[in-house]
Amino acid sequence: MQKLIRFFKHETVLCISFTVAVISCMIVPPDARYRTYIDARTLGILLMLMLTMSGFQKQYVFWQIGEHLVSRMRSARSVALIFLMLCFFSSMFITNDVALLTFVPFSIITLSISGREDLYIPVIVLETIAANLGSMLTPLGNPQNLYLYSLSDMSLGSFVLLMLPYSLISAILLLVFALCMVKSSGITLREMRSFSRSAKDRALIGMYVVCFVLSILVVARILPYHWILLLLVLAILVFDRSTLKMPDYSLLFTFVFLFVFIGNIKRIPALSSVLQDLVSSHEIGVSILLSQVISNVPAAILCSGFTEDLPKLIIGTNLGGLGTLIASMASLISFKQYCNVKDATVPRYLKVFTICNLLFLLVLLVVSLLLQA
Image (tube, rainbow, N blue to C red; front, side):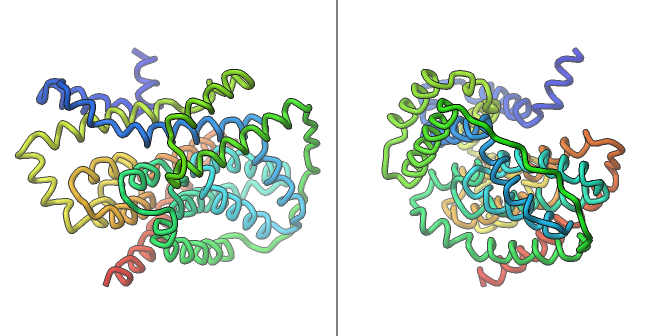
């Protein structure tokens, strides 16, 4: 029982999505139409990106880049700004989850050795916001973007142009918040780690660079996902098999369960009609509110079944990642990292996190209203 409780706490969204999928299957018994529920292309691309990013993480590629940049800084504010920009810009290509998994632990170690534990909360909170907001610019940035982009007929350029105003405003807001929350005091940084790689490690990094480029071409609909996914899996299986154990496969199963749930809900006339009326013409507001309680990935999948205005849904679910701690599941990554530090003050972290997120959400919501007017 204790193992089940721990599993539920660790994989809450997965368990809930499985439960609602099973309930919906009781109402709509499995049949041939179930095969049409699953968006295989989204799942395939997501798996490609997860495997590729795991390969880079295993080789400490992002860590080395971050360490090189941070080592050049000599003030607490400049170090904080580097961490924020690393999370903001890297999340556009390596996803918000990977950005936080890489740079939050790195920032904790750097601040700890420098004796600046007082900066844990402002830096980690702003890193989380930076990753969630930076990731909204591209389809690669987060799972709901990848799903909604695959579902729509938008070009890669159109997607970027849609979210560009929000990204620019977000970058300015992050700069303002960093200047206000982190004083320009001195800081002594540790020396850089020496990264000594074998010829095999360098070859593997080259392989993952090629895999990443191919993934982008698949996202841009230039290459078919079937063959590229097969090629990528075979390459990793032959040359770097242990990487196959690293991705969080529960995210893929969460998508599958939600696809089943939404597919069945659409076949229940009463529920489908209510949800259609609720979501249609209110995509941004509804997706933001839903994200606060079920997170933005499930909100994107749920709302996508009841509207054709996917650009508004893209905006809503990206802005919806701000707000509560569970609005974006990536936020839980940095929260758990902070909880593990010595003398962590969780109530203060949650207070600062919530206030900052709500302020960012308010400003970007106003921007959205002005752009939609």
